[in-house]
Amino acid sequence: MDAQKITEHKNVEADGSTIQFVIWKLPEPVPPTTHGFKYRMVYIRNRERVVGFDNERGKGDHMHLDGKEYPYQFTSLEQLIEDFMSEIEKRRQS
Image: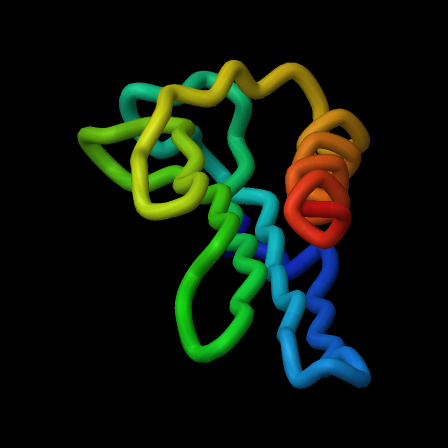
């Protein structure tokens, strides 16, 4: 089985900010993850990444919040999307 794109989304908001993500189902997990998904999610405002969630070989699941990187505990795709959108909403309200 090759990688299968599950979803892809891009939206440019009225204020010029951008929400974009893509998620793939992989035939094998990306080490050190064990879940079998590859994802890249970003919220850009004023040409800067404000929120980002991704996983990469050797690094695993992590998030970028306001210029800092933190580990992320992946549990499900639904929770991943919910957490991503929640972090965006927190920054929209500030």
